[in-house]
Image 1 (cartoon, rainbow, N blue to C red):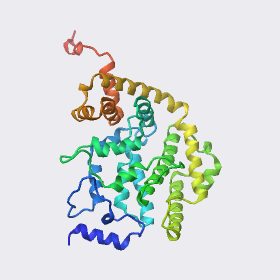
Image 2: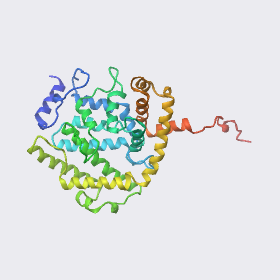
Image 3: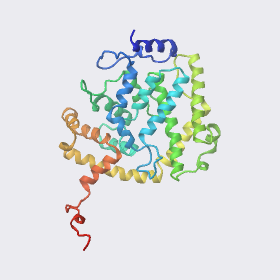
Image 4: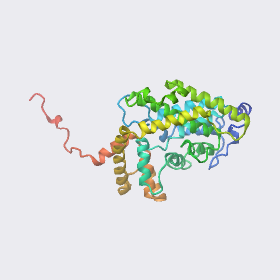
Amino acid sequence: MLIREEIEQREAALLSPLARSAIKSAGRQIYEEPDPIRTCFMVDRDRIIHSKSFRRLKHKTQVFIAPPGDHYRTRLTHTLEVNQIARTIGAGLNLNLDLIEAIALAHDVGHTPFAHAGEQVLNELLSTGFRHNENSIRVLTRVEQRKTCKGLNLSQEVLDGVLHHSGYGQDGPLAATLEGQVIRLSDKIAYVQHDIDDSIRAGLLVIEDIPRPYLEVLGNSHSKRIATLVSNTIHNTRKLMEQDDNVRVAPGDEVETALKGLRHFMFDAIYTGTVCQAERSRAAFVLEHLFNYYHRYPEKMSQVYREIADEEGLERAVADYISGMSDAYCVSLFKDIYIPQSLIPDARRFIDVDV
C-alpha cells in the first residue's frame, strides 16, 4: 500500500462525514497521476508555497503602505495568520486540514500592490472590472506556469475555496466545502483583529475608541478576541453539524454580530479614514501611470505577459503584470520610468580628497 493511500484511509476513518477527504476530490482540470506519498491537497499546498506569487506576498501591503516599523503586518503575515486560525477551527470540526491550508495559503495571491488601493485602481481601469479573489484564480490557473501546463493545475476544491473567500454578510454562494467556508470566516477574524493591533501601534486608534459593546462580547485584548471567535465558531458549528448536513460555518448570533460590527467600525475609522486614503491616492497615482506606460510599451513586459497580450488582449496582460508586482518593485519601476536621474557619473570618484 502506498503512503498516500494510508493517509487517505486515515482521513476516511477520522474526518467528519461532512469534510472533503482527498479521495473524494473532484480532481484537476488536467489529469495527473497521483503522488505516491502526498494526497492531492498536500500537492496543491506545496505548489502554492513554492510559487512566485506566494513569495511576493511578503512585500505586499496589508493596510498601511510602507510602515515605519518591522512589526506591521504584510500580506504574507496576514496569510499565515489566516492559516493558523483556520487550521484551529478545522481541527475542532474534524475537517481536512490539508485542504484548509492550501486554500489559506492561496487565497490572497491575486492581491495587487498597495492592497485595496490597487484593487480599486485596476477595477476602474479594466473594462471588465477587477476583484482580487477572481484575480487569485487567474494567477493560479493562468499566470503561474508549470513545465507541463499554464497555471498550477490545482484541485477544484482549492480553487472554489479561493474564489469564495471574499465578502462577508453578503448574499451569494458560499464555498462548496466546509473547509472553504472556514477560510472565508478566518480571513475576517484575522484581518479585523490584526488591523486593530496595527492601527493602535500606528497611533491611529486607542482601545477606548472601539465601541464598548463589541469588546464586552469578544474581549479587550487581541488574543482574547481571537480565542472567543475561534472557540465560539467551533462550538456553534459543531451543533449545526449534528442537526443538518446543510451547514454554514459561523459563530453564534451574538458573537457574529459583534464581529460584523467591529468590521464596520474598522471600515469607517481606518480603511476609509483620512490617513489611509491620503496614502492610497498616491499609490493610485503610481499604478495609473504604470498601467498607461505598459499599455503604450508592451514590449517592456516579461515574456509570459506578452504572450497573454497576444492571446487575451493588452489590457488584460497589463493588469496581470501590474497586479503581480510587490509594492517596492512597483515604486522602483515608477522611479526608473518617470523620475529624472543624473546622467553624470558619481563625481565624488573624480575628486582628490586631499585637495
